[in-house]
Image (cartoon, rainbow, N blue to C red; front, side, top):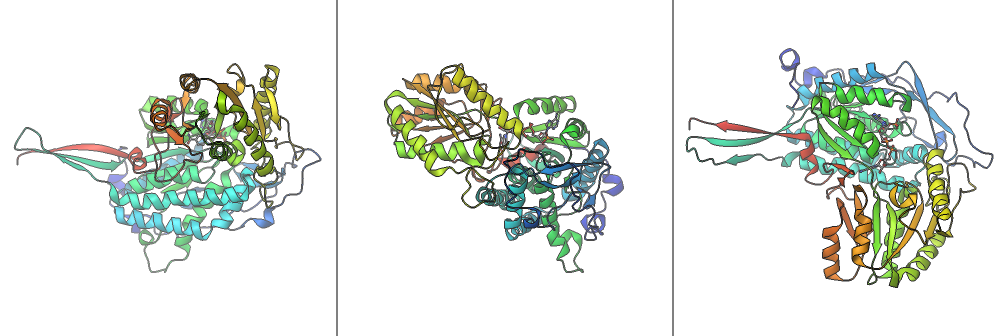
Length: 548
Ligand code: NAP
């Protein structure tokens, strides 16, 4: 746990006096027209959502530090990946802003750690309520900046808010222990205490939920946070701050800030461009006032942050990439397996860390599964702008992501794979790709050992259970895995043998705030959500109470 350097100077101050001015927040920033022209080919369709469709009140562009909206010296543009339309210019924070945010979080920690668990719980609950009240506007922001179909964006906002609700409940269930040692005149106590300031770095694919999954647990435990959202999706992170302020603005003016809302400095957001991500990341992850690094993103970036953590021995949570196998055994129910395959592969246009990456299908059921899967894809998937009614497949986040999928398809076809459906870029624009099904896939193809993060389903035919397990476990990552079987003995065997952190048995959607989310091998360290998630932000302290 971080040493509280300010305890002597500011520790006597408690929330009421530390944050007296926190309801008087100037509205700095605001939308500035993007100076860069919207890129993209001629076929790009009109922007179905448009800035006019987004809540101006929630669309903040400045950083949020110490309870204040602060501009930075520079800005970076954020665009809608579907149309290329400019959404706004956002504060491009650098090392200076990062250090200031850590300092604000640290000062706030000195007070926040002393707030009762019941009060932290109630504040998180209010934040949850405000998210629910603003859910439509928050969902539209997700669709605008990430391209996610609006229906899925609504789903994400609920999932995101549920983490605040869940951890508001868990905040009051942090228990210690009493241990009886051989020495009769002593008792051993185990206390659980908040770690300190957490540096939180999150990806673009769940711009809201990846934040609340961490921040809910951190705040419930008594920690404070500095959030660095992804360059592509800073608006959702900033909107969470705006929403959280809502209960400060609506207050009875006689109430103290400490009784009103989450105090200044507890939740800080420092957006930055990709150009600054490395140095901002390094600044917050190596700062001695930071005690914990919580990251969700690629395994490559996770390894860089682990190096930062090593130098000052910080606690880490790493939610990294996966390569989820989806195994269909001969005994499976084909319809059930196809429904699971559709859900696990095509959510967020294939851009989730738990998306199935390779389909292993046993010889006896192979042809029936491939036929039914192709039919389901043609019937149920509709590519389009996320704001359009009926769209199930939005754009990929950027053209680089499209190039990756295209490269994997070309590589597979050049080595003998067959395109069953899809296979090329979509006519809607540069960030769209057709939902694609490949069969005759073999393990020497890129798509079987590189995370796709796009709408590509490659099918490998196998003969025996042992063969399927060996292919699945050959990966050096292990986040999620799915399999379909009606054989109870096989279900136990395979569930136990798969080297992953989460298994879906006859089920393609497994995420839930109540259940532990996380991976093994190079998919990460630690668990989020569930009753275990709060432990990532707590330190154990052993107290030997003698002289009894
Ligand atoms: P990424 O490139 O690793 O980026 C994630 C975050 O790290 C972004 O905020 C990014 O900023 C930042 N970042 C990049 N380089 C950095 C550096 N050197 N120092 C500090 N921060 C740095 O990952 P992504 O491509 O955005 O996200 C997709 C990956 O996330 C996939 O591999 C997916 O499997 C994984 N993921 C895992 C989970 C899970 O729970 N296990 C959940 C969702 C996603 P910029 O945006 O500015 O680059």
